[in-house]
Every structure is written in C-alpha cells, then in structure tokens.
Image (cartoon, rainbow, N blue to C red; front, top):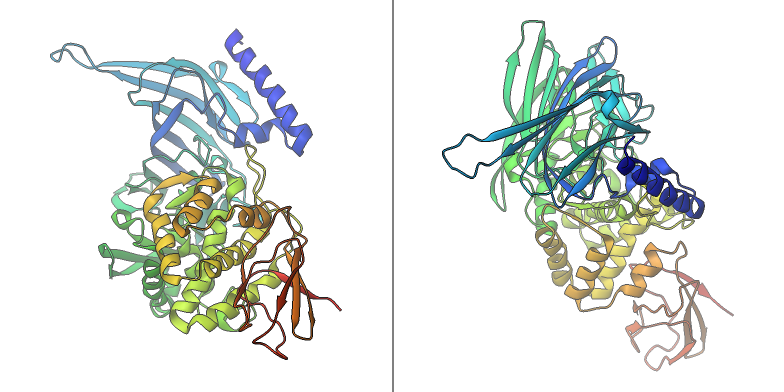
Length: 560
C-alpha cells in the first residue's frame, strides 16, 4: 500500500472513531455517509448502467460506465458496492484534447484489477490524480448475488418475486440502504448524475421497465432481450430502478402547465382492466400537485406509474405502485378522519415525491424530513384541493396521533443516519403550522411553487429550505424550526382562565421560544406566547372559553 493510501486510511479511521464515540456510528457509516477524500474532488455527470439479471440463481452481472468531472486534483477515488457483490475490474479512460486541431484526440486508458484496488468494507478505492476539469470515464465491472430485500421497501435490496401466475417479478427498493446494494456508484446523495442510461438484459419472455423513456429493445440470440431506458434529467442513485415482469402498457396525454405530458402505466397483464379504471386518479393527482407545487419537474422524461412487487417507492419518472388498486393505505385511513379513504395513498404520496425527493433532494439523508415532511403534507393539500379546507384540516389533525415525539426529526450528519419516523406526520404538521402563521394561502402557495423553481433539480440542505421559507414569508421561523426539527418535545400552551382574564405561556420548549397562535377570541385574535406568563383582559369575550386554533401543532394544558 502506498504512503498516500496509508495516510488516507489512518486519517479516515481517526475521524470515524471520533464520530463513533460521540454518536454510536462506525467507520463504515462514515465512508458511506460523508463526502470524504475519495468523493469530494469529483462530480458524477452520467451513469451508463448495463446489467444482466439471471433470475434462475438470483444473480446479476454487468458494468456501470461512470462519466465524471474533477473539481480539483484528487489522489484517491471511492466507488461503492455492497457485500456480497464483487468488483471484477475497473477501466479508466481519459480523452485529451490536442493542442493542434489537426491532431487526433489522445486517449489514455488504465486498467485496475483486484490487486490494484483497495477494499474497505463496501467502499473500493483506486489511486489516481487529475488536475483538469474535463470529463473522464470510469467503467466498473462487477457481479454477484445482491442482498435480498426481506420487507421491501423498508428493508431494501433486490426483490425476486413471482406474480399470481407464477411468472418472475423482479425489482429493487434501496432508499437509505443505498443503490450500491446492486450496482457500483458514488453512493452519496448530494451528487446526482446529470443523466443516466439503463440497459437491462432479461429473459425475452418478460418486459423490463425503468426510468425515463424506452429508447431501444434488442432481441438477443440466447433467449434474452436487452431493454434500454434513459433519463435526461438529474436523478439520485436510489431512484434508478428495474421492473421486470409480465408487463403490459397503456397511457394518456396530460395537458399540464408546461404543455403535453406523457403519462404511461405499466401493469401486470392480469391487472390491465383494473388498472385502466383505477388509474384515472393519476390525472387528478397531477392537477392538484401542479396547482400547489408548480409544473411536474420531469416533462422531458415523462411520468410513469409501474406496478411493483412491494407497496411503493418514489422512483423518479417511474413511480412504484403496489397498493392493490384500492383507496387508502392498503385500505386503511392513516388519519382515521375518513378523508384518507377518498383517494389512493400510494398514488398521491409517492407521486408527491416527484417534487420533494426527486426534484428537490437533500444532500444528506439526515435532512430527509424535507422529502418526507413536504410529501406527507401533499396528502393534506390534495385532500383540501378536492374536498375543501375543513377536510384538509381534519386529515392533518388526524395524522398527529401517529407522532411519537421521542426522537428528533433531523438525523446525524455525515454517517447516513436519518431522523425519526416523525419526519412524516410531524414534518407535515410543522408545515401546516407555518402555513397558518403566514396566514396568507396565496403567499404560502407561492412559497411552495418557489421552492420547486428556485431549487429545480438540485440537492439541498435543510438550512436552505428553512432560510427560503423565512425570507419569502418575511417571518423569522428560526426558533420554530429549531423547536420542531431539532428537539423531540412539542410546545405546551399552558393557560388559566379566571373570569374575564386569561393568562398564558409556553412550556416544554427551547429557551427563547415564541410563536404566534390564532384563537377564538374577539378581544385578541392572535396571541404570541413566550416562556413568561402574559395576562389578557377578555373585554369582548365575557364567558367565552379560550380555544386555540386546531391548525397549530401544539399541546394545551388548562391550569386551575
């Protein structure tokens, strides 16, 4: 091992040991979740993924041709692939532009075999050095039997399933776990390739569906067929997906805010008639979300809903659907308000991620609340769009019983650790509270649409989202974000009402916390509690019982 590589691993081990002692994480977590020395000097520009699926023995093989651009000089390059998958070799290719235009372009190649590659858990390192910013290509050849998903999409991996007729039905779900569970990549959420091509070779009796648009199908001479799909927009690693099965297709053209949008549906042949009836709901979803969030972010790649052998996932332009052609979440209303049975949860929630999760992706999974909180709130906005504001309030209020308030919504940075599951319902209720503090739905909708346009096809931090909301609303939400995102407890509004006098304050909150709350009082429609007691004479409200507006996510406690 060279001195450069030795120094790198000593430094990285020291760093990860420090992080581990402080936050109970490991060296492997640091390699997976941080923008370390093997990653921070280069950006992925395109993935060209070629994979053969061997269904008989649950193995895959192929290569990923990674186009990348150096940002500065780099000494080591990190590629991720999770055990038990195996990297066979790598091929580095560099095209050098000649000084003389008449000269031929020079091409430099270097092969890396296992003896040249340093493996550290699920990370592979090659020693190299680049100083210019021109595009290069690294092709990574690999094979193996990838981890099998036990309970997808929550416990991720390859899904080797069968449909009701016994035919193979194969897919992947790997958010959080990482795309490196099935193909070699820079498995770091902050760096999305600008585009991708997927070439999937499968038995010619089946159909392969993936992200973007189908550009080619080749029937091979060995009983297989190769399907080529491509996206022209940036895409995060975990969203690249194969769907393999007895698929049939139908579709429609949606006239949206940016013109004609192709909406395609790929379902098992046995479910075609059910899908044609049930998927009329997709256009309704698109209408509501374009109203609230702005144009669908991937017109060039189209929108697809693909039947999947698991409940659902937000795979960009190829959303996974496995909710059994029924309303609710597997037939249940998560809010228990009744409104959640008026629409199909998976169609609404997973498609909502096209705006928050796919268009706007967090750089670190610790900030995953941005993706899940906004998308969970999209369910309320959908309900309100079709059934009215009272229905939306009933739905979002009903979700509160699902909030545990035991851990923080934001996770641990740099180690691939997301926050608590409260990021869904608590994140949504935080946004609902912010909306009612702003007290101007026209402005709130403008903020939602502005997020989509200002951070179009970008990776972001929660700080960027927080600052944008505060700036655009002209309200400083710093303390409110701190309270709800970085603390588990919910503020308690304590109050005493004696005769025509009301006293109130916040407890169970961070130091200096304050937040306006709307009330039912004529004397003062809005109060702004702090940690100190305040007194309000109820001149216009004799005999009126004090009730805070239920749209604010707080707890209340009446004192004697």
